[in-house]
Image (cartoon, rainbow over all chains, first blue to last red):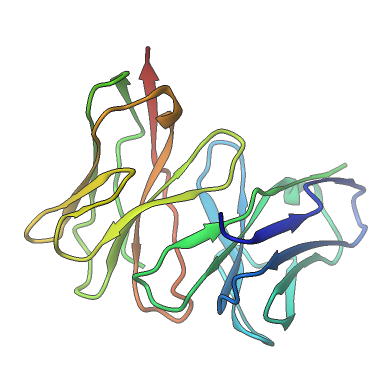
Length: 113
Length: 111
C-alpha cells in the first residue's frame, strides 16, 4: 500500500472554529489533492498542489485554504467551519503524468455542529 | 474536463463476469481512461487505466473502443468483495493532472 495517511480520522468541531486536516505521504509524489465527498455523491476536488508552495484551486475551493511547505505534507484548513463543510475528506497523491495511478488516503470524517 | 457517462447501478451474480460500461464521447487524444473503485467506508482505489489498447491486470481488464469514445471494465469473476462504486475517469495532461469524478456505477454482487 502507498504511504499516505490522513489525520485526524474523525473530528467534531463547532461552527466558526478553525480546523486543519493533515495529509502525509512517504512516496515523494509531486502532486497532492484534497477532495470532499458528500452522501450520494462522487468526490469533488477542493485544492491541489503540484509542488512545494505550489497550489491551485479546484471545483469547490470556497471556504478552504491549503499549504504545502514540505513535499510530504499537504494541509487543508477551514478558516471558520460551517455546517455545509460537514463531509468526508480524502487526500490523494500522484506522480505527474496522466498515465500513472493516484493513491487515496482512508479519509477524514468531519462533522461541524 | 471531458465528461464520462456510466449507469447508476448494476447487479451481478457471484462468480460471473461483469461488464461495466462507460461512455466518453468528448475524449481528447491525450486523455487516459482510468477506473477507480470505492468500497464502503474507504477511499477510492486504482483499478486499471489505458490509452488506446486493451489492458489487463490482476484485478480486471479494460476494453477500449477503437474510436475511444467508450470503454468497458471487465471483472472476470465477481466476488462479494467487488461490491463497490466504480468510477470511470478521463485523466489528461491538464495543469493538475487531476482526477474528476462523476457519479460512478454502484455494483451489487448477489451470492
